[in-house]
Length: 498
Image 1 (spheres, helix red, strand yellow):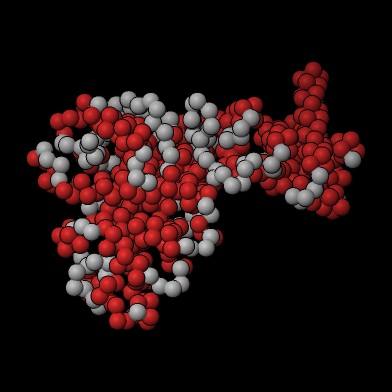
Image 2 (cartoon, rainbow, N blue to C red):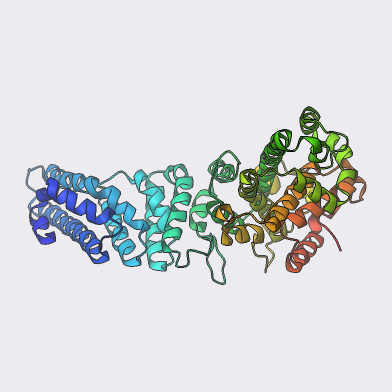
């Protein structure tokens, strides 16, 4: 068939041929060899067409007749363009195949199509970004090269489709993940630990406006309203942790927006959990409504509880600080208030993963770049770019390992039966979140050189939320913070010291 179509390309417009080719390419159960043969047929046709066009061009230069051979070429390439439009979607979808040979031939077809200018490149950009994460160097280099060519001709196209490309790259990684039980990660499992989408970031980072828009779009995926699946959030966080940042402004901008997202999403998360408990208690556990308020002293009724939640954070600190002193009693109090239906618990555990990842990402960037708390707090996105144009002094041996989220995904908690032990760990997480939200903003007390009680409480909550803080991470934290000489005068770091 392939040879027949080279001689008579118009046959590829026949309905039977379209149905045959498209069904072979899109059917996941279809033979790999058949898929490869269809892609080879398209590749050979494009190569022959390219050779034919080059020959026609040479003939025109030789003969130099008055014929408008350019127009003849356009008619021929017009047919090639129409043919590729017919099969483009299915060829691009072949990028998500588990077999590297299928992805290889699909990429060859797309590269030939783009080089001959047969289609508008914008529709291929997200797929090429995705192929740039392929484990085979030859394929990712080819995809990256295509992106560079597109960026030269059409400035802004890469940035426009960057987030869609990141999402598609996650699909590619899912397809080639050989162990389904292991979560998909967003960095290379080699000595470099480079982000899979590092080439994409390096193309965007030069334009400050594009870079910021891209980073904000990625961080917005962690918002509780975005409903992004947890494994994709892990994949995005991995990339954000390992991108090739060059100036201090880049990680500081991310940390600044993490704080904004935490304050909004964290409050929403706590409020929804609290409301689910109040509602169930009113119906099922009326006599024990005093216990429900998770040690918000003397606030037995729902209206008081809601009023408490609506108070400014700094006001709530003073009311609640003492109530968290006996952690075990708090856990027991909340355990008694849990509804029989475990859905709110699972929802809390699921949604909280995004916030946990952001917390972990912020701690990682802080360790990696050696920033003090005061430097992070003083950063303002509206300041002149020159202020934060200094190169980053990266620390070695700092790795991004969000243990809580990895455990959550490996245990498939979202679909597992909730045991008493799991309930208890989720309640503990809820109380840690509650404590963290109460102390999210560093107090002004830090200015006189003393680490405030609020800072200690915040860091205790963060350490607990991030899995008790492995000794390695704690060592890196302390070491990095103390080595941050340039910020020493700016205030005392809130990192927990031993």
